[in-house]
Length: 327
Length: 294
Image (tube, rainbow over all chains, first blue to last red; front, top):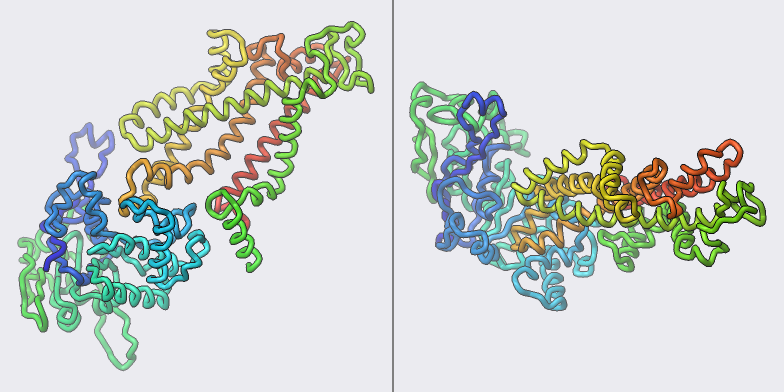
């Protein structure tokens, strides 16, 4: 059953013109952070969304919780059109979709105790009895692996991993159907990353929550995702069942990302694909295929025609890619 | 390390202030302790002035005229025979009242304007340009002009100094709000459905108050000095009200033969400003996590 449906989502940020440019009537420019993406997330599944910094993956997540207002396209949550609702009408839907931030140090108010921070969503949605709220906070805190006697402490008394657990407890409080995880472990030590990911998997099994797991690194996504989407410069270049994507990536960008994942086995020799150059400017994306400026197999057609996202043969489930040369 | 952890836990369970900081922690800070003690003495002197062995600060007595300090007349007498000790003690009332009123009023108004400007675009565009204009005029000049328009009285002095402090406060609040709005914990509060008034009350205000309190103490000190300067040039409190500024101004004429006329109010003024600044510095250290030693 489809829980979240994103269709042709676009988010353009206007670039401010200087007074000189305005006088010269220079055309208004905009950063095409997200430039027409479509995604589905089924109830209880995890979709990994991967791409390098600046590809627009966080903007997709932020649009789902209305921290950004979409420029075009629609987002439907259980049939409710998130993007066109008024802010007031959307507030009641916030129960169903929650968000976990990347930086566990900045996402907690330094002047609020754990009980206050985790209790805030409960208070906002009508749990006004302090005793009841405290009991619920203690229960949530225990769920995420902290001790209930720690709830009167302040954020600065916790480590990064513990703070991220607090952030997860806050997101869980309203029994959401979907949690957007915006690089939830990239600020943490590798040893702690695994613990937090395992916690997320356990919570998903217990409560049947769907995740949109945003990351810049395929290795992190591999463990937790059911399906994986790869973004490049505001577009999805490949989306597939996890096993199919990791077994046979078709898009040259996905192949390059995969070859960058470190492997523990030293006997395995792999050819690393090193991408040349930087991400092109999202103000003026390249014509045709956006990846062509860095693609190892680029041809003349790539500059003329934009490759659509089309189904290709899959080992399991479905597999789509946006490359002219994928078979 | 263990000791500090233990002390913060104790603080957070016993204290009332947010982020684990108790009133005891604040008062234990050395500069706050010293500055606070001086301030307490000044406040006590101002409140208890009639019972501290003073005489009517306006009463004239030929016998006291230009007398140097002695066991009888503690701070001596001025050139028309008024008691300098009584005038210095009563002068504390004016200075503290002006300092406190200016700090309180300018923070209240500045906070309101700053919050509005931080959240409402068009208010920001219009009001902050007005504030820029006000800031371009030196505060003493602005105050002199206002006093000239409205006449010398303590209330007008307070009004005049407040007017020049409001832009500074509203700028501070506005910039704090603008940076707070982008902080992830504010976005997190929005995501969990916090309505706007609660957002303001729980997240924006508490994090604005700390820098504001520090700024308030500096405004207090600046207002005390500005009042003295205004009185010194005759544009401040009316001549019949004893204030340190007009005492120094009167004494200046006979400074060579009777330096005590300038020294006592001058020392009182310097001590008060020093004390307030010490409290401000201490508060900045205690309230700003970046300055906190532990």
